[in-house]
Image: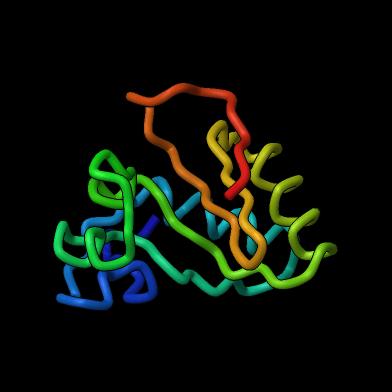
Length: 115
């Protein structure tokens, strides 16, 4: 695993990229499993950007433990969620146009929620 972090996980407001390398690696495993490059719509967020997008004050994006992935059709949603579960994601949020994946061990494990 490379120590260099992908810019696609950086905060769009300030460019800071403190995403956890394990999260980036696990998302890469999903891409390999489904043979599809994923679009990260939100990776690490600084406090300012998190507030601007209406993120929770305890958002896992603030600690680099979460990513939102663009997902606009049901087959891709099915493939991402299936692969995420097989790879070991235990916290999954499903929105109409995105999937939230996080590896925050300080929060309730084995949950899937909707937005």
